[in-house]
Image (cartoon, rainbow, N blue to C red):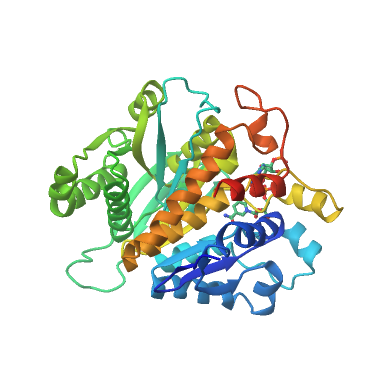
Length: 404
Ligand code: NAP
Ligand code: MG
């Protein structure tokens, strides 16, 4: 028996729900615990434990990531009316990811895991496109109104106090409505945009990727114009030299131009997206890459704290099959890469090269397993050549363990 790899400091482990919870335990048992003397601070975000702790456990988990610097998270149920009935919940707590994101002030980066037997549907793409989505404000925190009949709609700013920075109250006409219609008011904060830009440059420098940022400042001269201005200011004052040293370019263009270039280009860049653009583009990238289970997701805070997870949810449909005693063919790759991402980050912060080498070895074992034609159903139907048979999750994880 060889000695297990030691960790200097713990990372935060956040357990979750349904099928991903089953896979989580399996991945740890077969691929991590036999090799690593694992040190974690464990938080159970299973829906019943969030209910039992009045959601305090979610806040504690986020605070722990802030303290320890690295976390890895399983997918969790976001409660809605159907889940309330299913689990007999007394309250609908907010999405754990939203709570954690708000506490860490983070930006979410999503990138596909590429394997040569599954080609992206965009044939020119040679390298992954990573989406960095600004996760605050805009239409996601907007106020909307139905306008019943003709009338004037205005934007009004009332200063909180009479400091010179606040200036005088302001008022601007949105529209002189000629009849019934709709109106929407949205906002963002300079500080949040600044954090977003910083998180993008931190990520890009780490991954050695050029940064694209796109908005529509020709039309939205003040709102999108402010985004462009702050992004540019953060680049010029904080990252220009670091980027030059790393050979990374920063590129601003209009959002429609960015979309056109992205589908004609060969990929290999970080696409910093405003909130809505990121919502839309990340689904496009995920579906073009083949399977939701091949998308990684990492939350990066401007203070340099990282939380890794899979981009997919709890895979509810498979869980119900599993409960009936079936062995499902659920793909654990994004979950495994969440673990390797977190272990590699821990290794980098603690300067423990053995741990970092292990993370690389585990990722290589996963990719080699697929390249050898052993895979779960979601990939099997896309792979060329098609594999001889579809493995269930247990067989697939054993196949990875065999190579590891
Ligand atoms: P989902 O869990 O992402 O699954 C949607 C479908 O995508 C699955 O039914 C499956 O398709 C396919 N899929 C996703 N991951 C897969 C994997 N690893 N292997 C194989 N196929 C996979 O989304 P959902 O069913 O809409 O949501 C379930 C729960 O997850 C919800 O309660 C939601 O709130 C939560 N959620 C959590 C997070 C998070 O914690 N980060 C993110 C999103 C959703 P087939 O059925 O066709 O096989
Ligand atoms: Mg979306």
